[in-house]
Image 1 (cartoon, rainbow, N blue to C red):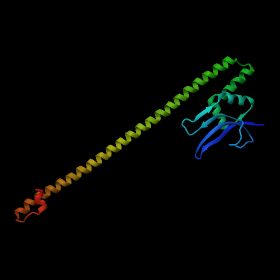
Image 2: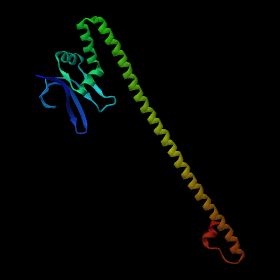
Image 3: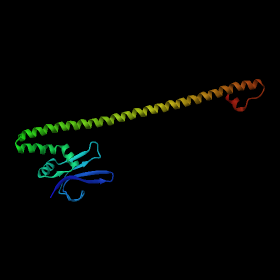
Image 4: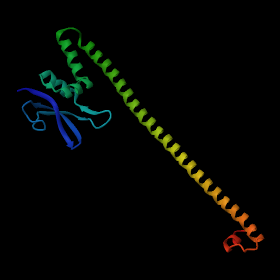
Length: 187
């Protein structure tokens, strides 16, 4: 029986969520499996991976073959590196303590890189939000200037009309014609 470590699709249409399972290679993708060893959610940024390290390592040592995606997931969590180091210990290349030390160094480096990546994503989000706020404030300021210019233009036109009306009223009185009631009340 060929055993595979692969993904089993869950979730709704357009929003996939996966279980990392150990299954017979002849079983359907979302069908029967031997053991569930973790979950993978690609919808988050960065992707959320919850993996039982010991079970995955145990199945790899028993000969289970991971699919390409599962291979990259196991590699990112260090399962494949740990298997590689244990192979070196079995061959007598180095001791178990040295293998454990190498793995711990690799793990601490990996965690540092992940934290830096998450911090960079967070900083990028806050910078984008600040840029949007600045752009909105600038647009709001431009709208306020445009409205103020329109008001000033309307007030200038109204003042020009009043001045014209005031000039016409005395001219009409000198000619002996009465000014209309609206213009008289305006004075």
